[in-house]
Length: 88
Image (cartoon, rainbow, N blue to C red; front, side, top):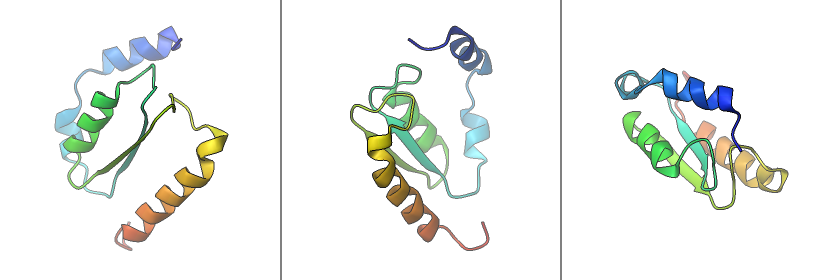
């Protein structure tokens, strides 16, 4: 069950798509398909709001970084860094 304080903070933050559209650095959105805090649809919307962002999701992953996925997540992050321009 998600922490109620975090959930209220997410709701209070409101729609940030306009701000996300102004992000100009390489973005990698990693999302758990079993995330109780934020739907996969919302994660995809975040990636779609950031120009050029890459979205990846993992079945069974929640709002955490499970140890079993660390090697895959590290590989994804390294690949993202390698694709990113050197000035970032």
